[in-house]
Amino acid sequence: MYCMVAKIILSQSPDFLNDIGLDSKKNKKAISEIYLIWPLLSN
Image 1: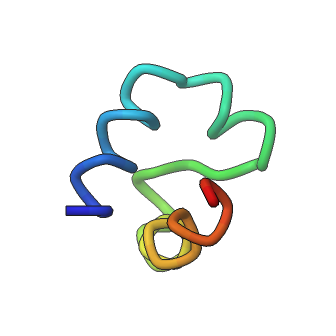
Image 2 (image 1 turned 30 degrees about the vertical axis):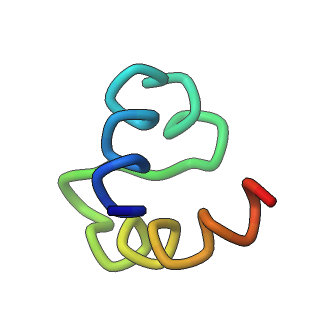
Image 3 (image 1 turned 180 degrees about the vertical axis):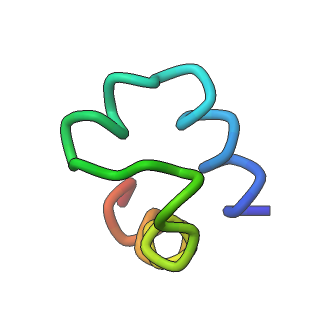
């Protein structure tokens, strides 16, 4: 569920990826780590 939420947020906020210097095509591991920590960030 958090993964889906994060995908929606990231898909609606392309600038967010640029701000943290990630390319979703090249850094899927880093993106998946964001999905894991997103619940912590949103609390």
